Image (cartoon, rainbow, N blue to C red; front, side):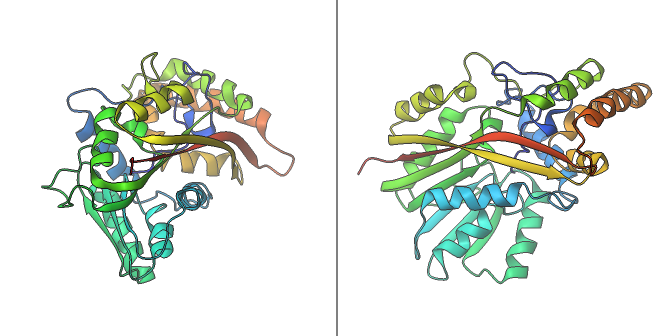
Length: 309
């Protein structure tokens, strides 16, 4: 599952903001016992409309992650949290018919969408499997230790309750010299902060999206430290701008409801929703360009690491 670009309801601890965060406590870890089941359900509800509202967002981020990973023809690759295939598809194209790319996702709905896309494009070198991308259990995906050339994690790793467990598992699966490539959110667009502040008083849903002081996603040094701790070397992160454009406020709302951002709004009481939407729309109006469009400029981070040779 690819997480939406930042999803929060207010302003989180590291100051990140973004157009999807209208109302969700933004975050990066899900630690509740039933968190994974609830998270799978959230993305199952997203699946029918995910990436189908006319907004160019996850596809371009997936292409950029694959470019940073520098995949080569014939390589074996695992795409964790594959969602509908934003990373899986360009990765499959990069490794070619003599390579192999497996996508793994907790959400049955997302996996079904990914399989549809694989079949539509005739990517015989790709497959999508439902399973826990944090543990990559042999029950879900039989893959031998030391057998992969690359593991990719596109805008998803911060959802995992135990990212240190996940990254240690990926190191185990990689061959010596194999690479881990991760994309995750940096600073959001501060112009959107009033939108999230306006929605925050109305929400009551629990969220996996809280960047705490101990989260490895609170900063680049913190994430680098986690990867070093589990045995990765040659860790580096580059930051790039992610520009997301919406034709109008209505399209932004449709997009929000097609992503993990819906979690917050599902928790807004029915009798409070009109007031919450009005508060958000008032702030959106201040961001609207003369042609009616909305634009967000956030920072996306691409981190690469290597299993020692």
